[in-house]
Length: 72
Image (cartoon, rainbow, N blue to C red):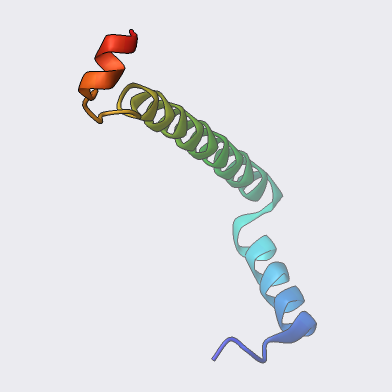
């Protein structure tokens, strides 16, 4: 359905949105979208760090054998 919009169709949609909402409303909306994207990226990075920290703690869970206990 959206495969054949093309550049003229996108320009027409952009003009209609600009007329309906006005320049000020669109710029404030884009500012909020930018803040949301930044917050999302920050959350993903924090989640990745948390997973890596958890993986560091749980990395080696194999029990020591008798020969390894004697060496230590």
